[in-house]
Image (cartoon, rainbow, N blue to C red; front, side, top):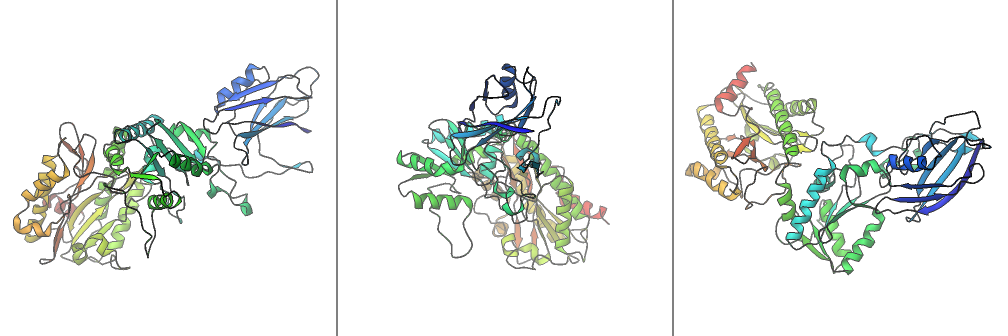
Length: 558
């Protein structure tokens, strides 16, 4: 026997997640139960226990929960089932469904998802939860809170305003999902179609998020796409520790209110300097940040949009010890994968096979994805930068020949953090005299840079030091518009400022490349370095880099 007692509309606060419910349980239960929950299971249970109506229970705010009731004289039901459902049409209300179940003599009820059709229950696929699918990164909510607080401080020091960071749209076209870096850095969440707001003037953060994940819904295939709630998933909320959560459908109204109030809106412009209005290209498209900027400018012509790139860079350039640990793991995996790839180098093998070996080794060592297409180039291909090589379909599939040099410019990614490392190997096991000479020119420049790294130095100063170590007649083969390297972290080009003094915790590459088209010689060595209080630590120090060491690696492969 099943009896629904009452369906009530109750106040619901989307901002804080607090719920207040007053349920008059008529007929079978004469006492009144007062439930006040903050989306926390234990508080939900304790309130029911305080009324003497349950002996225990386990449920979550917004989810179905079943509680055994203490039998009372004259009442024939011993279990109650509660389900709290926000109303899409009225975000300020929710529905509390109360069911008293089972005849006297039964003592338990298994929680289940059911629908009644002429008295029969039809089983369906359980609704999915974020925590069932996502392996959380090893960062506590306090770290994300610190990152947001640090960004708010940087914004406040540069004039305040409201920083807006969009998430990915969630479409991967079959690839592994990867969140947009700014959103991921400040929240740790892999949710689609969301926007993080950091209000520097009020000192708070707001996450606008869809009620449900559209990727888990398909009305025509409910068995395979059973739905996944996002906004009301309090386990998800615990990951980032953000102060307020609001439905994504409220963002436009929020933005309009901020524009009317003449609040400054800050966005990542992609580079330092004044914010540049994106233009729709004749070919290709805009990225998520450019699309958001263009839409805000089109919908709100009076909006006070300003660039927040410098503040983002200042925050993200300095890594926490937890980030550094992940980057060391990624560097170690990359080094091992390079050695595994070098073991296959011999005349006749093609570049794609070497690339495949590198990728498979990275994944075997725990890499969830590859941060950029591995650059494996040999012979005449080694003389060209990756963008030129990638201009044609089959150019990067060349069979290696005797006498060639093979350059690897590659990286693994572990838990969202990457490495970017380069080495040059002689196919025949020995460098020629000319090849060895050019290798030493590149290595001498790299060593000069590494030796000079310490807090207070700038990339511009390090570039000047590099050119002092490069012979004048070789400088035209070693050209750079800024620095022989780049900051890394969550991407191979983490936001950075060339004139920002180095600080402990900064991680970047050192890679004085050499391309000599006259001698048909190109060499490349790239290392990852960490700025410390004392100076520098080379995270890739265990990977052979000197000519004789690289030759020894090749001899060991024979």
